[in-house]
Image (tube, rainbow, N blue to C red; front, top):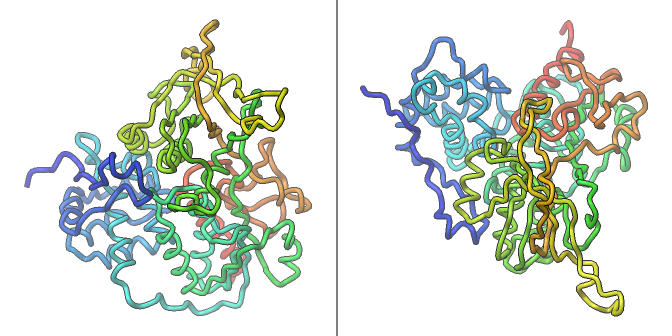
Length: 470
């Protein structure tokens, strides 16, 4: 049988339609397409794709089940390693991880591993009737701080081993960055809620509206009888550029902009907490979060949305699929440009002027690429005399986030690095006994799947520490 050289296309909403709604862009494979895509797998003996997966899913085995049409069996294989398969199938950068190792990808396009994972998870969620069996309890209690991907993964792995796990979430909805940071059109809230419910069925307790460091301290968790604590509190502290005008009305961090849209439901037809309607929006940055913010602004009614990024398209760090979707939807990429000032309306003679203090534009300077920096990317250099003004009404700063300092400021003996990241060893253990950490709280903003990998590592170490010699 001849090898199909290209992945089967992912069905999507038309750009002119999806740009004006928050429904999921990618529609998912049909069963027939999923089977045909699975048949492209060469079933390599050395399984390089597994090495590229941070949570070590048995990819050849689940794809073999897919070839046979055993979709529930495929899900079962995936769920042995992953607590969030429906999430990973949507937002993980498979193209730089498992798919980048695919042998078929040497000559042709790699197998669409992520698309198959999504199909298997969606099939299970739509058709499974029985709840997972509650594991036999082992008598040990573990607290998880944060219900993002690292926290949920650590909780799931420990619950499967019989631990009594409680997840503490600061916000009113469980899911962390999966619900407040990723827009509905890329990861529906119902998908995350379903994954959380699956963990609850395994015996995981989730307590929302609990801010560890304020409501309770980590030391108080130990006093309540928890034998280990995993910190997966993420990186929710936004970074700013330090340029004039960042305090003007209409300037947001991407973190605030997406949180308002997601948790405060600004994406509804008649939102209670609207962010913006109409006008021109500039999103500063080139990562996945910048793409999410720009595409969200478009759906909230912006008449024009710009991505302002200081390097070229070749250096743009966002997933290529998200960039292509943004371009198809009409996002205007202003590359090799960098903001130097955000401009506001001022009328000191009339303090009642409603425009006072609001954004009216952004002064930018054109850039050119010079010598490579420490990460190997060519360093952007300003072109003298090239400043210009971009007329905008809203500016969203999306240049990264840092770990929130609350936990390290309220936990004695917890070592952090110069960026505020919690310092851990190879097992996720911090400078304090029985306190582990992983995900963005350690690394700063990174991928969902890398955070999940850290959660798995810590769960294994916690199990070995608490049940050693069992």
